[in-house]
Length: 292
Image (cartoon, rainbow, N blue to C red):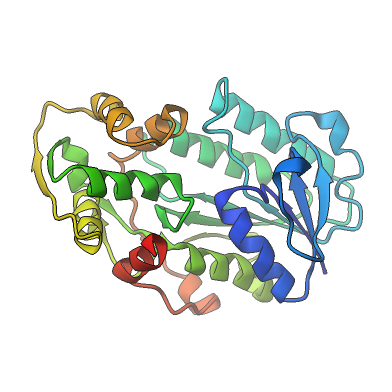
C-alpha cells in the first residue's frame, strides 16, 4: 500500500513515517522544502506547497492512503486562512485520484462556542477534508507529550524555570495528555480497522490532569519542584505574554495554544479503545521518556 504523509517534517510526522516504513508500507513524504527533511531509508520525497494548488498536480498519483498532519501556526499571516486554503487545495488535488482514505489528526475540545481560534480552525479543516471523495478518519487529541511538541515544551520550560508561579485560572482546566508513541499507534492502527473509516474519534492517555498538575509533576521529574498560586486577574491573553518571557516557544505558536487552554480537553467518547487496542502510556512515563 502506498501511503502519503502530508506534514512529514512536523513533530508527529517525524514519528509516524518511520513506523509506517517498519510496517512495510511504501511511504511518500509530502514536504514544502525537501532540503530540510532527512528522510528515512526507502521513503520517497515529494516537494509541494499545499497553499499552491498548481504544484499539487500529480502528487496523489498511485497513492492509496494519505495522512493530513498540516497546520500553519508559527508561520507568517493568518493561520486560520492558511489552514483553510491548504485543506481545500488538498481535497481538490486528491479528487479523482486513487486515494481511498485520509487520516487527520485534529484537536480535542468538543463543539462548544468557547473554542479558541486554533481549535475552531481544526474543526473547520475537519469539515473541509470531509468533502473529499474518500473515507475520512479523524483522531482528536489534546496535548501530545514528546520531544518536539510545542505545547509540552511550554509545560516543560515553565516547570524547569519557575519555582514559584503566579498563574491564571486556566491552570485548573482539565486535560487528557497523550504520549506521542500512543498517538502514532492510533494513527497506524486505524489502517487495520475498517470500522474507523468515515468516523471521528477522541484519543487520550490514561491520566486526566489539570494544566497546573502537569507543570508540577513535570517539575518533580526534573528535580525542580514548583508552587502555583492561581489568581483571577490573569486572563489567557495576558498569560500568553507572560509565557513569551519564560519560554522560547514562538509567540505565533504559543498564543493560539494558550488561548485554547480555557477549554476542557478530556476524552468523552472512547469508542476507539475497542477498535484499536493501545496500551496507554502514563503521563509520568511519557514525560520521563521526553526529558531523557
